[in-house]
Image 1 (cartoon, rainbow, N blue to C red):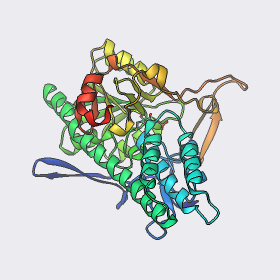
Image 2 (cartoon, rainbow, N blue to C red):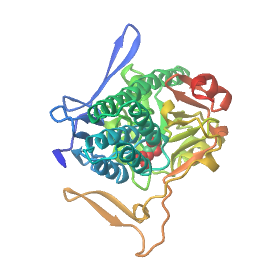
Image 3 (cartoon, rainbow, N blue to C red):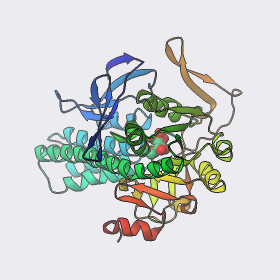
Image 4 (tube, rainbow, N blue to C red):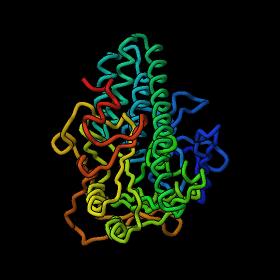
Length: 396
Ligand code: MRU
């Protein structure tokens, strides 16, 4: 259900407090109001509210999710997207499942069916199964509907707080990379290339890739972002451009094929992308096209970093190529393009009718092409040894 609509332009301010030399993010704002990309309706706790990312940047609409099916559909049609956000949405899905319990319900069967159903929705981002399993684990200790409901809500809200804190820390660690490049360039703008959207919209708050950029900008370090449009759904053009623009970050939108040329021309100082699933050995699954950026960066000796919370690391797998399922989406996302015309969002075909198209959602960037991982615990090399040192508690 659509709750409210604002026509763009929307003002979005990312404030930073400088507290005793410690950089601190404040919440994202739209207009004068603080926003996260998901929250609970304060007047009716049975409603989960999300920003409809299918409509941005053209319309700002808030959707109400009231059932497990609503949550499944919102993840499936990408009303919500981005690894940490789909995880949090899945967690709230289990909370909504607890609200569906009645006197006839076989509680354990109902909850595990809901968990399986939600996890099946998008296969690549590990955050979804991590977050759903996190809530399910908490529910093991409870039997009564009231305590299941409370515990599921607490766990889903806790996941939001964990992800927000992860992004805060990623921001602080990533800032050091930008500061050091800025010093080397004697204050000339640091050119950062990114792919897809790993911003606050994808992450509840702050973003992974964007957190260091926002902090650098707010510290007065000149930055400029090359934004890959990110076909087929154009999350770069629609969402990253929107976020950066609203926060006053200089950016230039480029086609997905421009990165290599810009790197050859020394127009890129660093590439920072997100991750949907990272193996314990450092292979990274991210939005389709990421691998080609890594290859070009490697060939041009440009640092290539992946910014990711530990909720995006799958500590059980070692081989990204063999063990990560790559989501294949509707080919119509490739044969068609949607944009804004005549006051509404319109979709047009860009190829002959009946064209056969393939739509791979993600690709794998092998660890050897990655300079480092920016995590909430610090920056490490993309190797099993370094990941293990940083997250020893997660290794068997
Ligand atoms: O298909 P999407 O829009 O969910 O893909 C998003 C990405 O690939 C992001 O780069 C990734 O989720 C990292 S989010 C911090």
